Image (cartoon, rainbow, N blue to C red; front, side, top):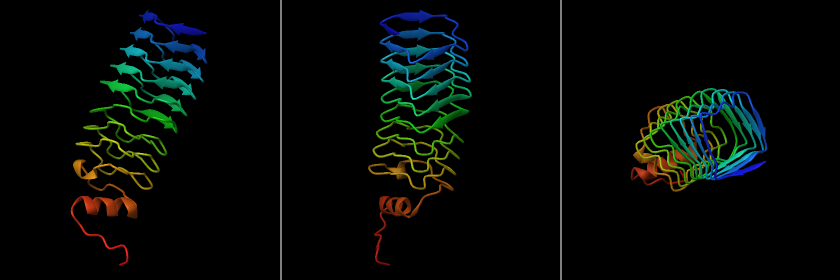
Amino acid sequence: MTSEGRHYRDEDWYGDDLGAARYVECSFTDVDLSEATTRGALFEKCVFAGCRFNASTHVSSAFVACEFRRCNFFDATLEGCKMSGSLFAECTLRPIRVVGGQWGGVTIRGGNLSRLDLTGLDLRESDLSMSDLSSSVLRDCRLDGANLRDSNLEAADLRGASLDRVDLSAARLSGTKLDLQGAVMLAELHGADVDPSV
């Protein structure tokens, strides 16, 4: 099923199995998607406003260049999903279960992502500025080119994460776990002359 350019408002899709449905340039306003499931679905350039994704499950689905405004993802599962280029504004994103996936170029400014396990997530070129990532697990994440300005990374785990073109000095760091490569990069950002031969 493919739906293009439609506007869905005040619909009750609670517990629905949407399978591999395709929605292109559709808008969803106050739609209840609680406990709904998708598998291999595509949402492209769609706008979600005031929607509820509580306890929903999405496997290998794509939300490409979508906008999520004032949406609730409480207890949702996103497994192997592609969220590339999507915007999250004033959304509830915790607790949420994320298993892999491509989130390159997402914008989550000022979001509360604390204590989430985002291990291995592709977050290249993402905008996480002013977000709370305290105590989150970002191990082995691809964060190259990500904007972490004024984000809270206190007690976060960044071991194994790729951090090319990331300015960690612009983030709040206290008790942040870094591997050797990350620690060297941070030292160099603060003006240290690191000698790898020592």
